[in-house]
Image (tube, rainbow, N blue to C red; front, side, top):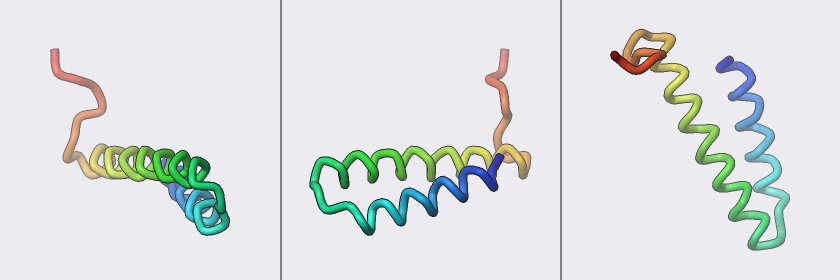
Length: 56
């Protein structure tokens, strides 16, 4: 899962570098921020620092 996220993040970074429209840049930045957050959570789950499911 993290590999796919890493690829998505790199693709978003490329898109961001090539974006000229301000609205498009903001949208890509938001998507990039979400993908980075997902990667952090996924890495924490893999390392056992976070639980995959909420406690009951």
